[in-house]
Amino acid sequence: MPLSGRPPAGLPARVRVVEVGPRDGLQNEPGKIDTATRVALIERLAAAGLRMIESGAFVSPKWVPQMADTAEVLARVRRTPGVRYPVLVPNRQGFDAALQVQQQRGVPIEEIAVFSAASETFSQKNTHCTIAEGLARFAEVARLALEQGWRVRGYVSVAFGCPYEGAVAVDRVHTVTRALLDMGCYEVSIGDTTGVATAGAVRRVYERLCATIPPQQLAGHFHDTWGQATANALAMLEFGVPALDASVAGLGGCPYSPGATGNVATEDIVYLLHGLGIETGIDLDALIDAGAFIGDALGRPGASRVANARRAQRARERELAAHRPAGTGAWRA
Image (tube, helix red, strand yellow):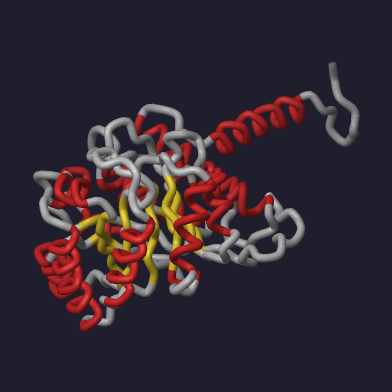
């Protein structure tokens, strides 16, 4: 679908949509998708115009069996020039595994992601360590990755609310974000892991962050548990932040956040951005087809309202075309 005019003043002219469905999405879906399907999904997303696709995670297969075949996925994906395929690397063991894949199988690792939390209890539940201990681990991973010439991206989980502690102090979000940037992350994505944020909360957090951090070093990661994700994305864009995470078909959730639903659907975010006149480089119809592909593989429809509406619209267009006499503009009853 075409862009709608020019973006309003203050909003970025172009936004980089970071597709997290093949990792953060499928990691939190029940059951395991086979390697060939994961590879096909990544390739379909690249063909739709996504230029940053989080493709896997070097994590313990005991805790995250859905990501056990990450090395094979990376080896089999036909890479599109200009597309980045980052992987999550949460600790030294993950770094060593990524490096081994690169050195022994010749699979290029160009970018990794590390993550911290803005809540002590969530950090303990998720990574079995304090925030400070986790940041120390990530600092080592970031140093080693940068020595290899890899880019490093950071995440801050539960930045707007914790399922165990409730409200999270804005200053703590700033402290963790600053720590990730200081260890070498080129960008930090601020996560509403539980989906409780409202536009007002998003404005308060980004106002604090952007007071000392350039918006170009920030991104947003919103879940749609309470139906606020697109409104929250717009609130973030008002600060000039040019990067948004999203998950095709709204895949995922959070195993450590009871009741949390998936990330905001990439289709819904792209529709929002195009409606604002913001460029993404993404073909929305091709993206919707990629979402339908993974929905079929999972045996359920995706969570994107835009995708569902567009598919219904397409079906109606086909029905009308079937009743149009060839070579005329008239319709048959």
